[in-house]
Length: 336
Ligand code: UDP
Ligand code: MG
Image (cartoon, rainbow, N blue to C red):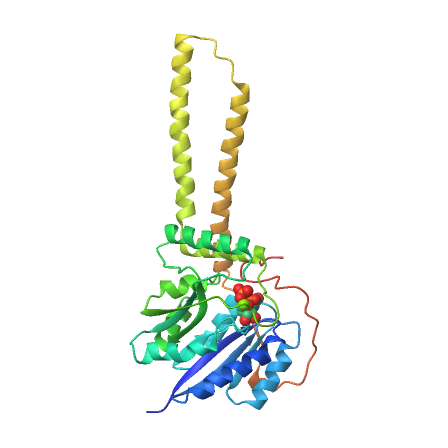
């Protein structure tokens, strides 16, 4: 029996600073794991800096390196999907390029899969040290809400960093939805997963590509994709208010019959109208979220578009400067 192949998927968006450091660290670990072969599949998510030319060079210098470059920024979810789709390995790992996912865990992950009978070895960080407190607070809230309203397990602090068997990768690829929320999909497909824990590590080079708003939009994606509870809650609120108004009507009729002359209460009426119309708009908004996601889903647009891969043998081409972060990730509206 030949050696097993591990594909390492590395999504990169404007990571010219981080890639060399990543490569240096990871190759050390890969070289030490002689019992398996490696393939590194870098996904350039439409970077506007020199990421592609660095990847071209890397692919020329090392046969284990492959890359797929997108025609524009499609977001990390799309990058991970493209990676899974193009990976050839018996085992597939997903890893950030900023060294927040320590490569030194790879041997442990492989051990869990080959020796302990797991289908997947995933990681979660047990601290959020070095992260802005407000971001941690909202992240915690998100996981708490998610646990309550979704049947799918979404583990608090889970990273996308994991090693999976081919059968799990195929299962994830079968989940071909457009609005992808991988943390949910990983749980949804099931399989036996071993959780490895580690303390949060701060980004080594470059800076985070996720703004607060991008994360907020991503969390709404997650909720809409894995729970219909918000729709249920808005119906319950609707029924509740029907009951309250019914009681109020009876009270008013009885009061009128006994005491008469009840033409008062304008201010309270205005308050009630404002509140009810607010609740209605809120409920319509929730409905709209689901409708919008359904709309994007039925259009069946491709999740990513490839511009170039290592087999294209490209000439050095136009490079732009990198300004700000992605504008069109999976969470952003697609219609212009
Ligand atoms: N990334 C990507 N497309 C994007 C944003 C990020 O492929 O639109 C990649 C990025 O290059 C990195 C990984 O996703 O390898 C995680 O991003 P980042 O470190 O910025 O996120 P954080 O760790 O702060 O959550
Ligand atoms: Mg990071």
